[in-house]
Length: 424
Image (cartoon, rainbow, N blue to C red; front, side, top):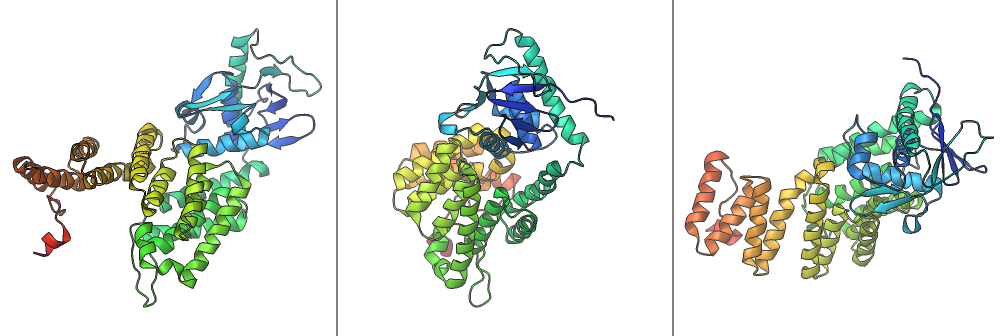
């Protein structure tokens, strides 16, 4: 395949955008965008002043790759940084909370030669022509970068992107072996690109998980803790060798945040470290910062709920867990890979918290919601059966448990039993 001449350029606000190189130029500065960021900009420019949903942008720009909305958030962040834009007082890219983005700067066509300037108008008289031009640029941006892999500036992100994706995949499996694989991959990336924010934060996260979930204790035995609260209660995180790991993780997270201060994922990474260091107020501040930047940051919401619970604020903790579940629901289709492992579990947890608060009818509703999503889920079935049995609905409880045993052969006690009951 032979690459033809690049598509025409666009004037976006004070910037001239050249899709053949992915460059922005304003007469003083010249900035080269990464391929995906350039494609996002071109897609937004195809419909100036119109909201483009997150789903539409992901489908258009990452058509050949399965990604979550964090990939789009990073591309938008990098675009804003290149344009000199501020998300809190946007002049170029406006965030439409929970929906998508809109290009609000004036857009117009401009000839490739920099000496000729086109008249810029927010509502161009040849709107159809502009839309077709921008649509051609979207294709041109992706085609150009795909057909010119020898470009040294374009190849560096392409080299690290697969490794980062692989490291993130290992990290999200939450096993000791997979976490160690993620650490190895992140270290490998940072050897080549020491200022890569994704890798800095990823390594920080994995190091924190190493000392929280799978610490090697003094006797050489590896313990395992399922939550930060359990790890803090055990007391090992304050031991010097674990504290040193957390100090390194904090440095990594702060360095990443200094490079991309408006990235919600990086605020969450720093919050994770601070929580492990028992600096709960500081951790809460970082999680709230992440949520302010991304109102659907469900991971930060779950972490914040845990922090509030550790501070004894059960009411706000429960409300935040519910907010996290609602955010997960909104983002489920675009981030299914990361949400699915926690979706049913969170519904059961919310049901448990409501049951402890004496709100049985609401608790039952959450257990049934979990089973609506994941029929015959052992934990949700056992929890619902326990609630029904405790409310005098023994026949319903027995029917649930019998079906679970017959169809799944689950080993989960059904109904759930307390430790004292299990010992009898």
